[in-house]
Amino acid sequence: MSPQSIAYQAISSALAESEARFRQMAELTGEWLWEQDAYGYYLYSSIAVTQILGYEPSEVVGKHYTQLLTRHDKVEQLFYASSQQAFYGLTLHYRHRDGHAVYTESSGLPIRDANGNLLKWRGVDHDITTRKYYQDALIESEQRTRLVIEHSLSAIILMDVNGLITDWNPCAERIFGWTRQEALGQGFCELIMPPYFHDTHRQNLQLFLATGTGPLIGSLTEQTALQRDGTEIAIELSLSPLKVAGHYIFSCFINDITARKKAEQQIRQAQIDLAISQREIKIAQQIQAILLPSAPLQCEALHIAGVCLPADKVGGDYFDYFFCDKDHLDMVMADVSGHSVGPALFMMETRSVIHSQANLSRTPAAMLTHLNGFLFEDLNNADFFITLCYLQYDLRNRQLSFANAGHPPPLLLRFGHSECRQLDADGLILGVRQQVRFEEKTVLLQTGDIVLIYTDGLTEAEDSQGHFYGQMRLPMMLAGHAQESPQQIVDAVLADLKAFCGRETFNDDVTLMVFKCC
Image (tube, rainbow, N blue to C red; front, side, top):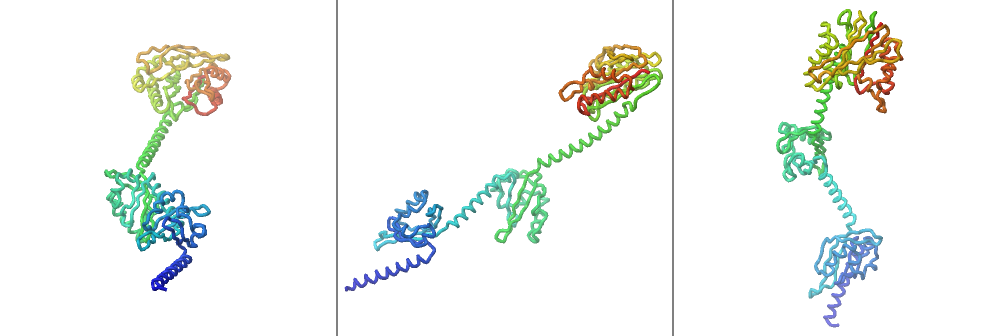
């Protein structure tokens, strides 16, 4: 045998021994070791392919490497089928025999002959499916977190242990006026806190680092912050620490509560105003109660009683009866337009004028003329008006005189009769025209005759169907209770009104007065 043959046999034997050692190592390792020919067809596959892809090595040998890839990766990796360059750490997406996805990190080296011609490929794939799953989950989690931060309706600010800002979301940009690029790296305290709070903030931070506790940590507090233009705003702040790699970071959630604080202040002021108004209304109630007759009037010649039920706490209705001298009883029924405090004030003014003129022995028509002249300017400026009926009973002559300023006419029920007569007299409501002529009429009364005076709040009270109590029911109620006292008649009419309406309160002031001649 020639020396050349001996040398060739020695090289072949060494190569075969090397190949045997390579395959032995391939079988012992958990990595998928493989060889492919120059065109990418598998020549050899280690047993690890079974664990990674579920195929036996014999099922892999002879296949082109792209046949095991997913359709998407097959298109992307065609480049490497014709490339003769080594590759390292290439992520490949395989389909396991049972269908689930498998990711590997692949590296391959070209094997060439002495002339540089590609003989085959030798490489290794490392199963990174689990690692990629967690990496993808982490990336997805970080993306979700970033999405939450970016779209949060609260300002989210992160800062490091030195109080320097490391993250700044769009809401923080909107609230404080600083862009993310401008805010990053700035001191949290110096950027958004008023100067008078800087020392306290630094002390609180040092206290937490030293003790693990602090007044702002883990609690929701209201603070004052600064916007870029120097405007102070009210904020709600929550500060939470997180220890990462032995160092603290702080997440800060901030809401601008300036509008809420302003609304709260307005509510507090409204509550104060309401309390003042309620107090004033209570005073007005007390004054009005004092000004109205406190009890029925009874004497040998007559009995009289009345009641006023304001729609609000105070009303614009007014009734009164009083002796202007020993022989004359004056009776008044008035209704100021609207109800509540404004009309009540006019009612009080009207009463004052009437009582100031009572000792002058004015007739009903003369009293209305004086009232209209005195109140016209006030009523006209305030856009109010008054309807008023004034009656005067002469006890000696049993004569009833009356005049009317646009008020519902009183009802007269003669003793022993069942039908009522209206005591009507012409006259314009007070406060419409400065010069008005009021008609005055008289009627003689007998024992048992009854006069009922009322405001339109009584006849215009509605039931649940929108029907008025009306002017027909009132005469029937009066006739049905004619034998009773004025107070009993008043009580009976009110009870019937409440039963008709189905409630205890009404949309307008309700006032009535009953006079009975004895």
